[in-house]
Length: 412
Image (cartoon, rainbow, N blue to C red; front, side, top):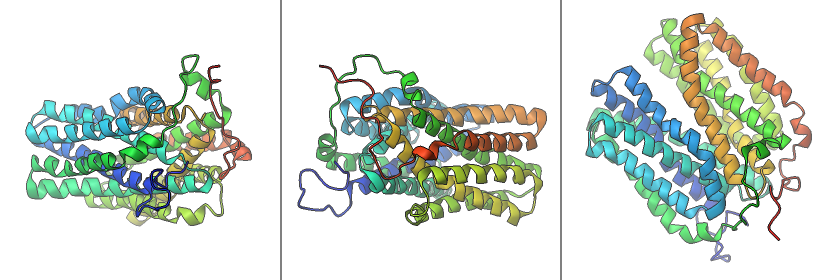
């Protein structure tokens, strides 16, 4: 069963393939997250909230998803995508609407919780759905997904910033609420497809355990690579602005350096259909890990803007191409009845990184400075490439024959 055709009208090809439509709906939800995060932060500061409380509110976007994503992934495996996607879009709408109705610090905290949970649930379900395609089509779908996240990651904060300047801190939330409203309508319109696209799985005889998933070597290697690459992404977003301030770079210069990273991720994802003709997913992941490691070693030795922009751009190229490949490898190596749980576990690792790394690096950076943190990141990601160097021996990028079919035997 592929995600490109409506099962209820096989003779008609839809104007927009279902996988692409799902990516566009995710773009709306992710735009609400990225724009909402900036809006919550700036609104809190305008209310006089301290940086400590702002940090707590921002951490709420990732804290609960870190603990709930695996459980939610199992739920998607059990009941299918429609109800989870509908609930996720409604949760996002509630979250982004609360600060518009009630301009209070408590409303901002609730907004972070509802938006974070809604985005986690929606993204996880979309990942599981577009991964139903086979072979090269699956990698194409994950490329669409990564590209949509790049667009929403850029447009969300831009819309939020412009709206706050021209409409004010209250009405920015009303404007951002349009996106999840459209997403709710979109999910409703394809409900028949989503319901028909789910194959019920029998209840496992034993309670599923994360330990069983980690016992699958190719899956474990993919999780290791994913955790290190996600950590490198978060490290760059956290350390480079601080490094720029320490080197007396202006806010505009720092913004340009960070924008070059975002631009590179967008460009490389546009070029992925060509790149994947010459390299397997694991080859691209390993090249990205080695390139990122060298990049972090070089960063703290330069202050020239053009050099830092170039390093940031190269890092964006390397890290930007990894997400669709990681998603493809996870889907390929996951047991067929636990793919939602696998994507949930990946999201738990990413959210854990987003919560833990800024806290840890903030504390350690005060004690030892930033250069050791850059070096530690470089060593960690390079060692990760070394320990997973043999993973590509089992790399079959466009073949599902090696994928585990079930994690537990079906009941007799």
